[in-house]
Structure formats: C-alpha cells, structure tokens
Image 1 (cartoon, rainbow, N blue to C red):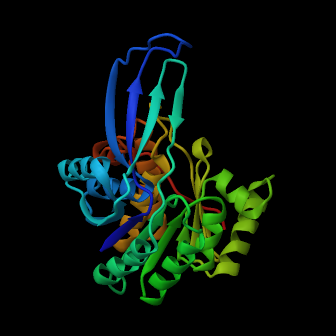
Image 2: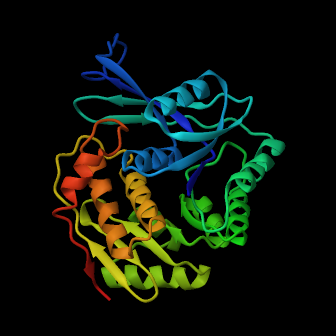
Length: 309
C-alpha cells in the first residue's frame, strides 16, 4: 500500500483574467479550485493511474472540508487529522502574460496535533508499505519534525520517498529515507553549489547517497530530462516535447508514478519511464489538473531510458 503525508495542504484557487491593471477593477473570466499540497497531488496521480493510496494530511475549517469534498469527487482515499486551524487557500492569477502564484503560510499547529501524526501513521502503515513524505511544514514547525517522521517510518520497515526543499530537505535526509526527488535548483541548494556538468552532478548525487544511506535520487531537470542515480547505476530519460499549459504538479506527477510502479514491483528503468510520462503529461493540462492516464499511456510509447553508468 502507498500512503502520502501532507503536513501543509492547501486549496489552490485559479483565477483567470486577461491582464492585471493597477487601480482598476479586474473582472475574472473564470475561477477553478483544486485540492493541493504535494502529497495530496501524489495521491491524486496514483488514483488517476489506477493505483490505490491513502492521503494523510492535517485538515481544518471550511477550506479543509471543501478540500475533502473535492477528493471525494475524485475518488481519492484520505485520512484527515482534524485541526482547529483553517486549511490554507492559495491564489494563482493566470493572465495572458503569465502566472502569478500567491502562497499563503500555514497557521501554527499545536504540539499534540503534531504528535498525533505519528499515531495515525502507526495505526495505518505496515512493514513493506510505501510512504511519500513531501511538501512544506505549517508555520512554526521545526524542520526536525521531518527527521523524526522519516526515521520512525524507516524503523518500521517502510519504503520512504522524501520531497522537500532547503532546510526541510536536509532535515529529512538525516532520517535516511530511501529516495529523494529534488529538482536541479533544490539539489544545488542542498549541496550549496551550482552544478557545472553532468559528471559533477552525478558525483555529488552519489556522495549524498553514500552519506545518508539512500537507495537512489530522482533528479528532475525540467526540459532537460531526468535522472535516477544510485551507487551502482545512473539512468537518464530525455524530456518529451509536449504542448505546455501549466508546469504546476509535474514533479509530483513524476514522483507519484515512480513510487507507484516501484511498489508494484517494476524495475528502476520501467518506473523512471512511467515517471517521465506522468511528468510530461502533467504539463499538458491547465492549472493543477495533473496528468491524465490516457496521455501518460500515449507518451510511454515514445519515452526511452538510457543507462549511463
């Protein structure tokens, strides 16, 4: 079974306008809401691809209830940890010139509610299950929280995928997950160095793998493809040219497909192929609609995976 953990979920509200004009009334052409948060997106993609997962998240207030209703409509299984704080509402303004993302901070969560996260995980997760831990943390929660969660899951014999940025990524690494999925910018912040070549990137990735006992790193480079790097091999898959409508959720789609296929027993090569297809399919949809299964299946016909080392 695959589980996802989203500590700081949100509702994404897309507002479509022609253009932004200072000191003038701007009339929206349409608005669309999507349930969001990295782990929730992973669960949504797994559902779309025909898999089963349980999305665990901290949910509160009217926004949280609306988020749950939307997950119900999509058929996504979830386990909510109810909190008194209102779930975040992010606003994305889509104009002809580009996209403006206004991300709201999460409210402070009490210590007892944070402790209940491990209680819920302990009640649901079993040895050999897969847990995807990803995203930001609520306001005031130390990155060390992720160290404890990842370490505990590993002690239970769980396969852990971890996807975060900055100090949260470093904290999660200390817990020794099985896999991490940074993009190039996140990876460069992790090693505190700008990468100058593919050789250097692979070398630095293997240093991280050795240092933290990882099985592998999924490294996405946007239009320049993606890598799966472990100590004994490096796989590369080239980006497929597709019509781009929104890059939002491409990384989550990539991770979801890889984790799902690995949980089903696929090889690293096959899982990476599915991940590339899902990530590419996600940019073909507007907003945070994520990928569509039929697009993923079509893209699989043209995607290749090469062994570099």
